[in-house]
Image (cartoon, rainbow, N blue to C red; front, side, top):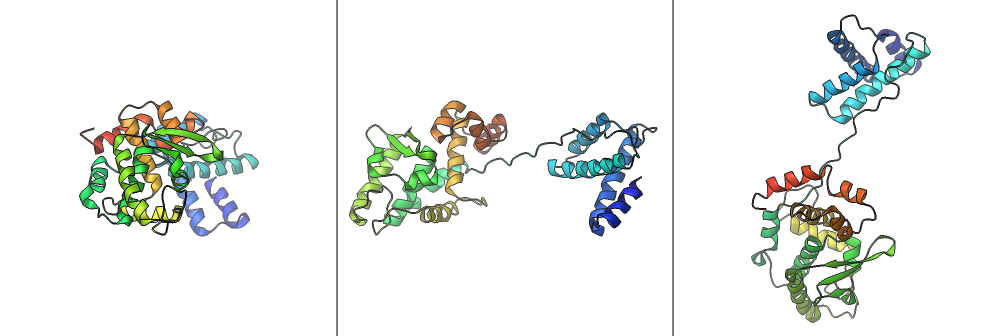
Length: 292
C-alpha cells in the first residue's frame, strides 16, 4: 500500500525524489510502530488511538511539535489517498490535531546584566550617554512600547506624582507609575538636555539638535548599549519590555496588574506576551536571578 501511494506521489503529483523519500521514511516508521504495538494490526485496522499513541511516543522521544506535525501530515495524506482508492474503510487520522507549537520563551536580560548596564560607572556625562541611559531605564522601569516612548512630551511626565501618561494603540491613554530612581534619572537627563538640545520641541526625548527622537534612533541606541552586557540575538526595546514584564511577574505582581501596565486589552494577550506558561517563565527568571 505504501508503494502505491509513493507511485501516486511520483507519477501523478510529480513530487520531488527527496519528498517521496521523506514520505516513505515517515510511513515506514509508523508501520514499525504499530506492528511493535500489536502484531496483528494493519493499515486497515489502525484506529485513532494508535495514531495518538504514535504522537505521544514521538514527543516522549524529544521530537519537536513541528516534526511530529510533519509526520502526521504524511500519514494524513496517505490515508486520504487510501480512502479514495477504497484501500481502507476509515481514516484514523481524520479529526486528529497535532501538538501545538510552543512559542519560544520571550528573551529578557538577567538582573545582573541590568545592574551592570545601569551602573553609573558604565556611562560618561556626554549628552548621548545620558540620553541612552535614560531611554533604557525608562523601558526597564515602565515597560512602555517604543512608539509610546518616542511619543512622550514633557507635559506627559509628572515627576512629583511619579506618573507617565502614555498614548498606546488606537490612541488609548493610560497612566503608568514609576519609582524614585526613574524620577531622579529624568531630572538628571533634563538638566543636560535643557543645556544641550535647544530646538524648542515639545518632545521629552530629543536629539542633540532638539528634534524628537525617531523609533530608528532609539532602536540603534538600545541595541548598541545592550550589546555591552548581553549576547542575546535580539537587543531591542521590546526585549526591555519583556524584561520589565518578567521582573514584575517574578516579584509576584498579578497578571491583571501587568496587563494594565503593558496596555493590553485582554488578559489572554498578556499571557501570550509574557510567557508560554506562567510558572515556567517565573522558574526561568528565578534560576537566572538566584537572589530574587
